[in-house]
Image (cartoon, rainbow, N blue to C red):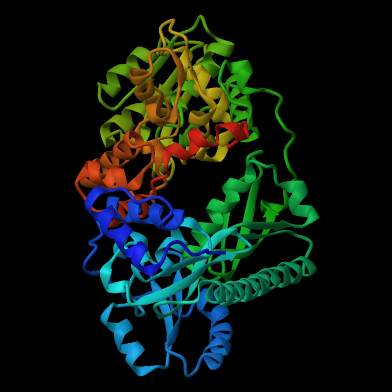
Length: 591
């Protein structure tokens, strides 16, 4: 509960002293107010004017507004004739709703732009109830000269944070504003009660969402004997058949497929392979935004194949995930049978490395050739005629010209009857289109999973990659840096991980790699592919955050931009504060 500091006159003198000297006389202001003044000053907020930004298209019909409406309606009736306003803001301090019935007070609020659409975040207007409660996540009372900006000195405000009990995140803020001086304990008690009532209603609405998903899930489970899974942002439900069919590594695959189908809208079906190699058909029924119920069945009723025994370790490859182990085992079986294979996967997953590892497991003394489109393909094929018992990899076969593909087809037909067989592996990016004459000569197809589908393998890949790059130096990956690596989606896959570690080794010659040693790209979860300019801008912001130990205001000063811009860019680029990992070191291992 807020407490009073000095008198209004002493607070005003303390503010003037702070603005001139950067220091505050002892005991004249509350500690929380002094800390907010310092944040406001670092943010570059004007102390004698107001210029809050205006936002269009705010969510004024969402869960928060729906939950808050009856609570605000009730309070509005209680305070009908008083010069007081009730305000609801979102988690970013942007006003969604304002209730004020007193004419002169409404006009004053309009003058200071305390109105729907404007942001009262602390970085925009300095110390105030909404912005400071947003920063501290605590009930906040600010009165008169405690406000950083002079135009706010005529009012007093009390604000309470609204926490979404389902996620633990800040959902919004509820505020009461009146003329100064205000009664801090009473106003704070009112907004505290309002916040708790809104939180309860948010939980009820969340429970309704979960009940809707559960009802759809149970209905699907009752109709037919299929595996059924319900997927939402933070929730997964599976019946017994789905639990028996799906491995833990299948969940990332399933979520990717659900996201694709929900994005397409309506009911859709798709076929794909699970981590164990089982071909399944999945039908997706969207329930609400980002949630769906899916039915999964084995394609053509086939039973799950027996799990192969070959492990990545047997091929001297790092990884223990089931999804990767099965690809290794299946490729090894094709090598033993000399079955020609199309090995597909995203760029950087290590298709050639996998083929080489299988080759070295069974025929290390034989030749291993890689034919690429950048050289004379026909000539390379002629040279491969003498590779009996060895392995020939047709790398990025989708990029071969028509003439090169014709040469490959002729070569494959020539060696088809040889008693000294050659194992042929063609690699291609996922989704690449190959002509039928070539596909017909590659009877088996295997997909190497992306690193995000076997993220647990990062723990083994990192020391393996470091051992090949340290040249005898004693360098390892610290727990905090490992957590950063485990949170990445790795669009560049294993190649991207290797490049990130090389970058870290250039900064850390010995000892443990720390989060600040990793490249800037490791500290983001961007929702789109960045342009070259956006990448430069993103990297500059991350470097500034690292240099200032995560202090956004100091980073903004270092970059010569406003704190508002830093916050906006952090959100737009999906930058995760690298300092968080170091601060959480004491929590122990785990992503």
